Image 1 (tube, helix red, strand yellow):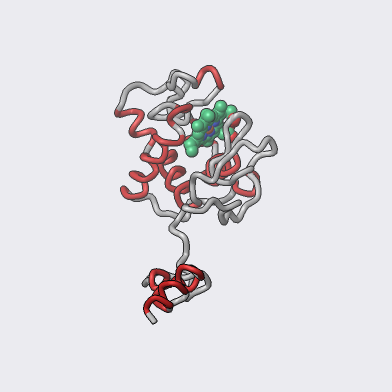
Image 2: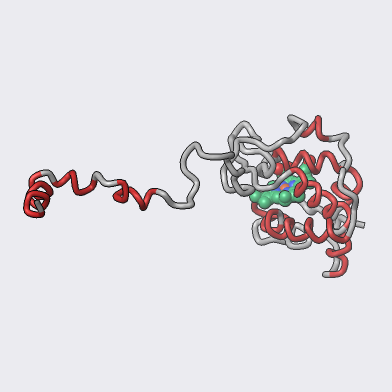
Length: 183
Ligand code: HEC
């Protein structure tokens, strides 16, 4: 009997794997395909082609005002994001004192033009859709020339706007003189 079984297994090796316990390893506490409700992907782990921005260009954004109240928390977030995303061109305190500012024409953001003339919404729109040279930060392919990314969420963009309008000038003054054209 025993010899027959051994012989059988040698002749038909597939039989050796055909026992219920042969697939034990499959039965783990892991989630199988199509099983249960899918957990949402962690924030930003999957690239998406667009984030909810209600306006479709800078002109539409112009009349908007920041929906996020100016607070220390908002200014701190805005400052951090500004240093990451804007300082390379506009300078650490926005005075157009970065090494490349002159070469690409990045303007000072502490001058009256930005501080007083431009609306919060226009600055939001500039960050979202880019400008002439400046790339877009709010919408992938936000410009016709396809230069852009979706790096900054709507909320983050408003933190940056709050900082540009309500924190940048103070930081710039604390760090030294303003540009010649500013008052
Ligand atoms: C790659 C360089 C670069 C980066 C990074 C950059 N900018 Fe600019 N930005 C420019 C240049 C160049 C101009 C002026 C020419 C233009 O309008 O494109 C400008 C213009 C602006 C203007 C004036 C727009 C107008 O209507 O005149 C604002 C406001 C501004 N930037 C804000 C920001 C903010 C906020 C950030 C960070 C989220 C940022 N920029 C990041 C290059 C840059």
